[in-house]
Length: 373
Image (tube, rainbow, N blue to C red; front, top):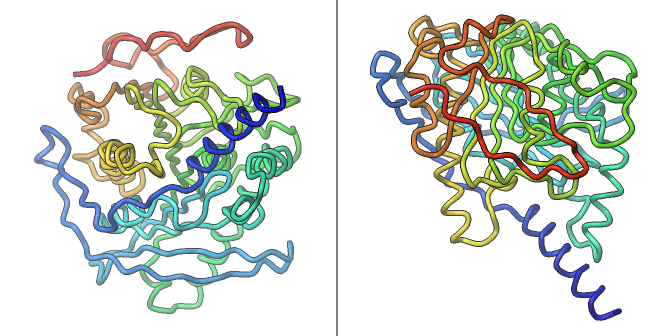
């Protein structure tokens, strides 16, 4: 029995190490033109990358950041703040920083100390370490407050009138996140905090992108469907049919719940076929990582178009998100669903409906028909 238990623990440890030791994709990701969207082609800027470390004196907390910005932009740049998941770092998802900056955005990637890769690196039992940290930070409150502080710093930089500050357009701010970082993005967009403490909504945030959105899986004081109905910004969600949590207990079929339960603004859900939880950062095995890159390229392309539609408010790109041809945005990799505003009847094709399951026994359901082509 001890041998069997040892093997079981070893397998779990390997799964977690695979989750954490992600391989960064090539730095120069080019955002290709979406199918049938020649009218919304965009020039690509060269990208400058820099690092900084900001200190939140109120919380006695350092916030390291990696900043991707377009070199010599011709106009003010909307700002995107990216938040990594449990055990990650601000090196995670560099391909997104490169892609967004090449499209004229400033992308600030935050590192959440105490929730980052230092939690597990060099540890004998990384799974236990991660579970312990997850139990302390499952509400996303620490990450959300880190992002709020970063926005405050950026506001101060704009006021200071430096060349970098003159580049920033803080009237057009987006937040993106992966897993627990995605939870932070949803909290800033108005999700009712699962711990039912003080509201974390930040009115500076005008749109969000969430990869592998987590659903609260510990004791919550707010019914899960109700918690998402207070979200008020446009949102783009990404998930996969095999997107079960590695440390958290959110199942693949639950990832769509925020999309289903939001009310009052445009939201979109891209679901990739046969894609798991690790595609956004990349698997450690080269063969798997190469397969991940096709998803990452599509995430970079679709999210860049979303930011252009809902942060830059480019008319042609916005019209694309309202059109019948939106189904082409995921190509052959998956499907896209949308709800426009608070009225499901404005959707084209089959309206996306909430899926209700017995969480204790229900397997992941088959994916619905693709709505748009």
